[in-house]
Amino acid sequence: MSALTIPTPATRRTERAPRADEELYAAIVGNDEDWQRRAFEQLHGLVHGLILKCLGPNSEVADLVGDVFLTFFETAHRIRRPMALRSYVVSITMNAVRREIRRRKRRRALGGVSRTLPEFDHEPGHDDPKAKAALIQLSRILDELGGHDRMAFQLHSLEGMQIAEIASALEVSESTAKRRVRRASEHVLKRVSRNALLADYLQEGASRRRG
Image 1 (cartoon, one colour):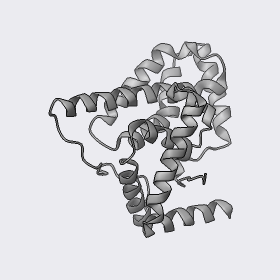
Image 2: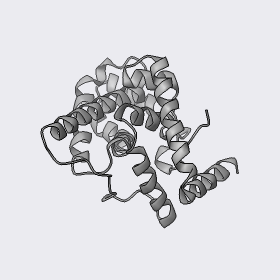
Image 3: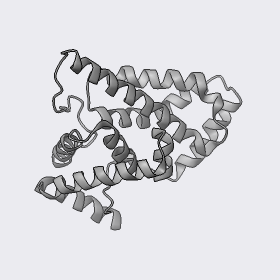
Image 4: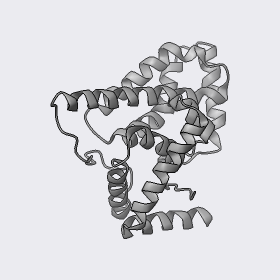
């Protein structure tokens, strides 16, 4: 299966991340008075980005981000090692996403607002118009996936998480996580191959990474 990685600055892992996680973990364990502020500043981009990618931009994103951090602040003491910090936050975020997907399904079943393709009322963090257009089209392709497949794809291809991490975050077996990633990737790759703008954008990103 071909790997599909979208080259966005928000999802690139840096060498500083492990060190920052260790320092934040120490602040949590030590119950430093400013640990919640530090956690919000350090992890907000991760949480907001995951919700945005999984659900699309809408007026509820800020509320969901708030819910995730409230849960994190109440339960962060359960984390046992620094390297588990981010996966714990991702797990909380995915639980929030699943609840929102269920809520939307119930609302549609009761005759609520019909689901439409997400529009980027919050623009992607790119100054390049081509990149913005490509990400909007990618979001629409991802919107064709089922909720579970979409979440697995986001974590694997956009966040760079391994199958074991995805399985833990989504609370499924590794075989299920792998199957969802494969199914979603095959769908996305097929659709992207028919879209010249997206194909060029992804090819440019791959060339930049190789360079």
